[in-house]
Amino acid sequence: MKVEEILDIVIERVKPTHAEDKKIRKVVDDVIRKIRIQAEKIGVDVKPMLVGSVAKGTHLKNTDIDIFLLFPERYERGEIEKYGLMLAKKVMKGEERYAEHPYLRGVIDGYEVDIVPAYMVANGRAARTAVDRTPHHTEYVRKNLPENLKNDVRVLKQFMKGVGVYGAEAKVGGFSGYLCELLVLYYGGFMDVLNSASKWKPRVIISIDGKKFEGVDKNSPMLVIDPTDSRRNVAAAVTMDKFALFIHASREFLKNPSLNFFFPPIKKALKAESVAEIIKRRGTYFFAIIVDKPKVVDDVLYPQVQKALRAFEKCIRESALGLIRSAYFVSDRIIFIFECERGVLPMVEKHRGPPVWSSHAENFRRKWEGNERALSPVYIEGGRYYVDIKRRETTALEVMKKCIVEKNLGQDLGKNFTMGYEFVQGDELLRFCQELGTFLSYKFPWEE
Image 1 (spheres, one colour):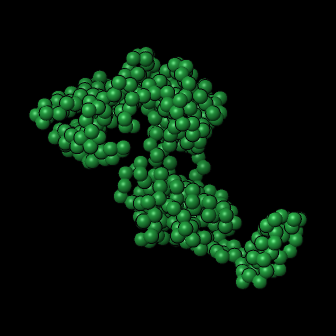
Image 2: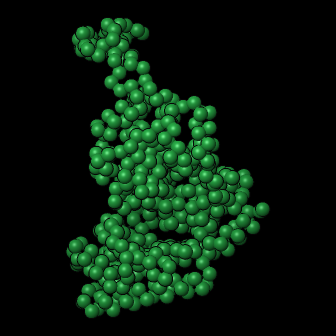
Image 3: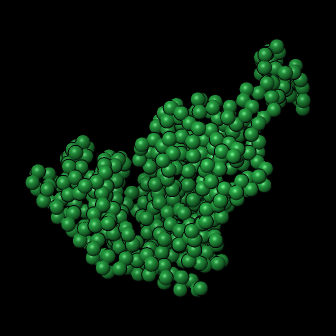
């Protein structure tokens, strides 16, 4: 199938119909009208505003709707939170969520709707909270993105969804909708973005209006200067892995175009026998740690899960178990899965000391001569002191127990670990056949 045919099919599948847009518009108009009525009743000065992809005309089918309640800056922070939630709850039933401050998420006529309080500021640089720039992002795209490029944005968003890099939230660590819009605006179209991305390497720097970056440089793989606030990197959330995955996916699509990049094939779950056979064939050691999921929102949860995984990886590497791969899976529990070269370590550990001529050499000798953990005298090898010592932890379980006690695994997740966790190895691992099957599959999302 030719690229043009593929893109036509994608647009047909993802672009909302006129009837759907009309339905969305009705939901938006009803919510805004009701908010205005309620605001007048309680005497609150607020401007409801549709923001995000629906307002920009770059939304996909079954989109979310974002409505901001813009308060004048004379209101205190606590007041906009109080009145924002009060007004939202008067027009919609929903769940109270928390980003930088509380907002309400509900469902109206099948559409997920977020009603978010924010400050009405003159420009992006004047933002008092993280969400205050959003209306300015909306206005920037509306004014600068040509009508004929809106479908290119839709196609890029669907491509990123298909290959697994769409979303700036901590759970994904990828590309936001606003970043997709800026990339299409900067490069000139969907295929232009992919052609350029196929040649990217860290670090990509993009300034649409030629402004220099004035913010704190965290050395992200991408720096896309926000045209509404040159202190902000729009691509700050993009992790190195998602950056690399997008480059790889762009190259692969350009070589072999396929609808699979946009709508990945559903992978068949491996049966327990197949999983067991793969593990046996690899000849390595697998184990898992399972803990209850804290009752916190995803943007609080996932940074803690990722932090815990990094801590576990560090402990395993330092232990000489020989970490090969690791991953986590989140459902009602959190499952950390590890593959190591070995699961048991010898009692003896060769402990390296300083060079014989080092100022620390004598301290090393004094520490280990007669030490109860020493299994040999101090000896010299390659100009350094060495000593064979008794290893403190000789199994993966002992290594992980120590790690859980000593490492900071996140405020909420750490509490759950103190209440109890499960260590699973051997045949018991097949209880988590679905997660293991995903872990053992090295295929990219678009591959059959």
